Length: 259
Image (cartoon, rainbow, N blue to C red; front, side, top):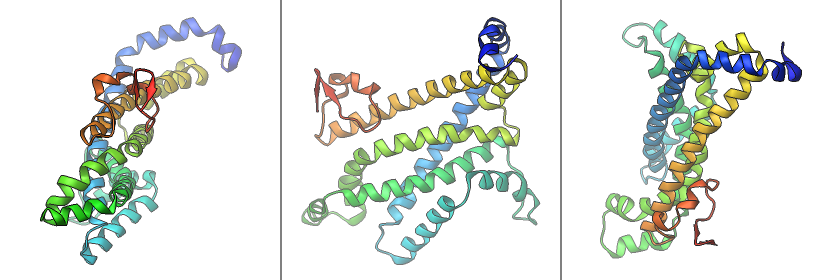
């Protein structure tokens, strides 16, 4: 029985079914976390490479980076995933080859969300006060060294709230990898739905994805607090541990006072 009444009437048996399939569900969570983690690492790399490239003085590098970003932002993640899974193997040698489902998921997530992340990096770099660039010249630092010693540490603290939201979006986007025979959390939820109905299965899916997203928020908040403390814009993590549980980008709290 499905629907609201069926949800409550079958709650006990459905929990029993969930308990029976808990090993498969745990395996699905592991796949989802792994795909999210690998995709996020690739996206972070792409974000920095193409974000910095978009502010380069060389026009060829700047335009090439812009084309890459706009292409992967402007095309569907689903299409990118299916292209890697089903079109790439059909290309003529040596361009065509088959990839493992997990690698396909990592590439699709990394390329798509990395393009969005590149815009976050570019915007954060441009938000660093112009006086900092003057300081680089005054210290006789090379442009590359000044970028990584002066600009990036400040931009890192600015970009973390946006990157946190982006990684949560990446986690939710990872549900589509089940369409390429990757047995992730969403795939296991679909198996449970066949026996329990939609209400119970999808309510469980909401809670499961929320818990994983909550862990991402805690980690990213910790990185943000640490980054701001290193540039003198906030307290140490040990003095504001409660801020780990705030919304991304919210103000740190020290002894009950917003900082």
